[in-house]
Length: 422
Image 1: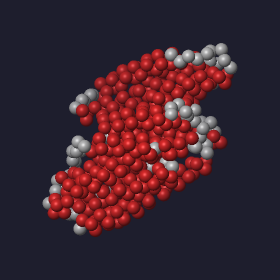
Image 2: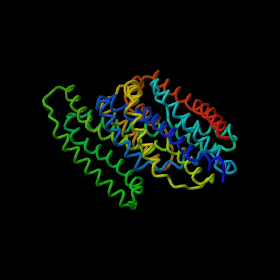
Image 3: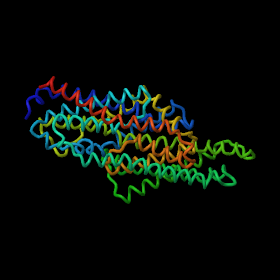
Image 4: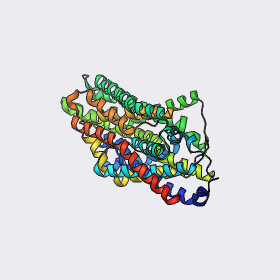
């Protein structure tokens, strides 16, 4: 039992909750804005529509499926055994990490920089642990593994986006009748998006509300949802009023209208996948603080998530996007490469698929890098000249700066909080 935690427990939890909300707000302003940027950049939906879609599906993803990757952030980056004799240091550090990462995200969002929220929080946690406790407290092996995923996941999403875009070109655009083939094949792409989104909901999200399905049942249900989404897409596309006897360019424009409908589905998919994965960046450190304080200083190997933590993170994400997300949304959606609805679809579905795969394995990937990788994959399918190298270089530089910035701020706040409560 640690006196400082018993005496100041409610205050520490309250401070952690405020900073956790700040961090979630920063995620919404920066990372969610990235996620919706492709839809807005391709003019498939307006910024206002993107915000409404994100508010619904980010919240659903965070609340229904956001618990899976929490433990990786909370227990994987640092070795908890180094804090057994002084658990208050873990509490101070996690609070400092939340404040550091949250402030950095808000500053970056104000400048329109699409940085990684995962970089921010990992940098912050590694910073306070290495300096405040000792470098041996950091699980460097896992940190290296996560850094490796920063390279691997953009490559995976880029490859998936490349293949999706190539399939669209082959099946639709490079045919004698693009519009007829769009009506024929786009419902299948819609079904694929529905399958991915429903699978993660069924396998991960529904257990939070007491429903459990076997693997066969989960895939069967996801398949049923995919068929339903495909049929809905076919009906929606059939209602589009488009003339058939037009020149080639007008026909391509009509095909893009069909893909604009598809973009609405993939935008929902991306928002849900993002919410399920990235809410952990905000609630992981908060959950650790609540667990340690409520147990009187005992660092439990496995602690139940307090009921109010996930909704707090979900609400923070949604509010951050709605109030402060426009700048980053325009940066990522307009500047890397020219996006049309068909290109945006390939990038968004590829990124969503990669996020879902990573979320299922508990790996805290960077959604920003996954999405940028997917957009680059689409750009590469049209040749290197289609990519704005200067913008990509600036984005990469902002990523490199994020890690040390998070660490430096976290160290500063850690010693400040430690000085106040000790």
